[in-house]
Length: 278
Ligand code: GLN
Image 1 (cartoon, rainbow, N blue to C red):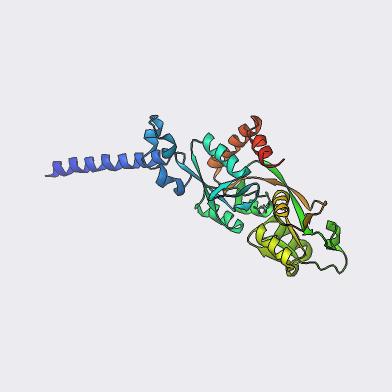
Image 2 (cartoon, helix red, strand yellow):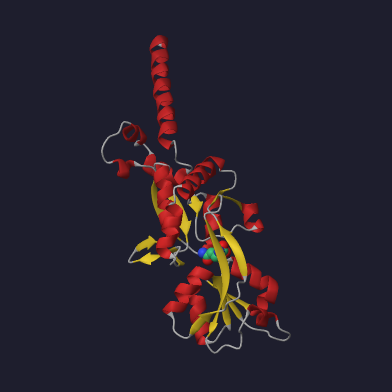
């Protein structure tokens, strides 16, 4: 009986070791639990080169705010744009399938840190404060903060915003660098935050703010979609866009950096950007 028990125990141990082994291999390449469900039990097949590769690749989840043309925006129910395409190219290099999750811009860092997405990519500027919360990849694009006003606005250049007694009301997208800089410069009492650029533009058209400070490319899209608005010539700030990952996730960050480097060197990123920014 004792012997039978020992054999049984050995059998159970082998079984559980196998389970642990399978658990490790199936999660290989998936950086956190978000991809694990999809990856589980499929890597062995993928490695063996069976058909249906695309369906069986582990998932790489990107958090974004898809109201930021031309970097991320909806075409029907699909999220497209510069970031979406660069991210898809990165995922392909990593042998993974990209899944894009739309959320408030302000929620992206939390989602990255909680692991509900693997990385954040949203025309996101590298800032010192954000670097305290997440790690950033090398930069893949430059951004400029622009000021949008109504055509007949008394604001004709950035300096007008700082003029003695000016007291202009500024609209921004919550949590963006436009929000951070404007709050610093003009005080939170003069800055109204909106969850995306469209909402800020509606407020400008409706007269509740005097200008909107937002990144230049989405500014161009917003101005061409809404009559009676213009972008001031003065650039408010120059910035670098990058991808963010959970602090300390160097394994994923190194892979993303290597992919960005290759996609920069072979001209893929420049080609994608040129397709959207003429
Ligand atoms: N570049 C700005 C930032 O990082 C805005 C990004 C965005 O609105 N998607 O804050």
